[in-house]
Image (cartoon, rainbow, N blue to C red; front, side, top):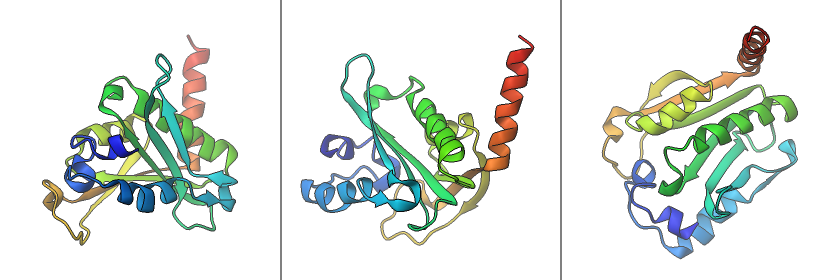
Length: 174
């Protein structure tokens, strides 16, 4: 986690690429990622290992927006640069979206990123999420590109069902 949070390219759209101390990782990142959510039956965090090497590739998060309700969850991910460009973010995002709707009783999956984060936006789109809005938050530290705002993507349970049905129909015609 420390190395992941200290890669300036990985953290570019999160904190401007500034270094993170070990104390910050211990005090902020790890407790957030290991928090137990009774409404989803466990933690909202999964570590990702590279199948070929077994090396830690990063993490995925599917956490309730309201700690006591699984109705709306936020999808997140952070991968080492060695895992970029291989489809792992999309694969993990799709797996968690399926888990959310098929097993956790979720009604909506959301995800946010900076408007200028084209890679993350592409993952969200490939995973089936749709752009809902661009918004401007009051952030304490300016990050290059933050003046263009943040974007929110989402998918509802009904949209997920329709997408799955469309995939099944197309497969039955092959």
